[in-house]
Length: 381
Image (cartoon, rainbow, N blue to C red; front, side, top):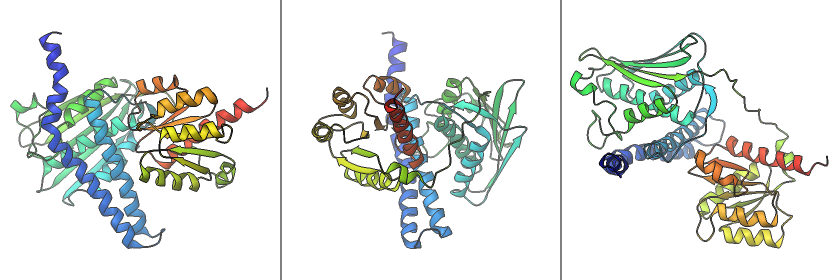
């Protein structure tokens, strides 16, 4: 291995060590938001009240932001290639700006402008949200306690075939000698331990991995403006079907084997699955789950299993189950749902992957798809 290659290979370890304090700072902020809003929800009372709904919505947003932070670390170490989908880039920018501004100083004015038609892209929604979040956070930091204006402009150009986001602020700007360092992994203008320092480097990396680019325009005393481009797509957004009120009754005929070594995850899983109308059997280890399948191989309609467990992993359980019931739907729940992992799990007989943390709709969709395919397989020709 050359000296250059050795340096590249060692860089993630060295830089992540330097940035660990900032990463912990950001993560603890998200956990504080989750804990604080959960406490507010408990104090509010019954569901349906506006303050309660607002607190619960913020819990969901904070959890997604914490998940994005984990994805930033994985993206930096190149271990988290995520599947792509078709979505409205313009709306993602609006939602992200609304979420971040709600938690920021009230002396910051945020304006979102959309020029022309909606910008539809095919990308990793989580990673594109990281781009938007990092640029907005940088702009908020730039205007500081004195306050100012942050303007986000989204446009779609059919001529260039790109969606463009411009994030500009009325802060002090960036000195010319520092502009060449902007996209280096440890560059930050923030105080030590405030923010994780991965932001702009990841903005550049994610944009380029999606076939786009990022640039910066700034003059000291005249604010700063970042431009990001992402290729447009001609593909159509596939809307998720609306919840069917009769879905619960349809699901009651299905038996789910839930496998997880964490008690709080089993408890949450039971609540979610029962709310969707499934009958649930639980196992705390892969070995215990396999014994249940051996005793009654035809009882379960689908298996929902954690990936990393002692004694027997989710992938190992899938392989053993395949020997008894080759077509039994098996869904893996994992924090490392990379594209490479998806290819690998198909070899184990896994029919679907749900990435942690997940929305209930994501889990419902995975179960519906797996069971729908099962029904087709059982239908006589």
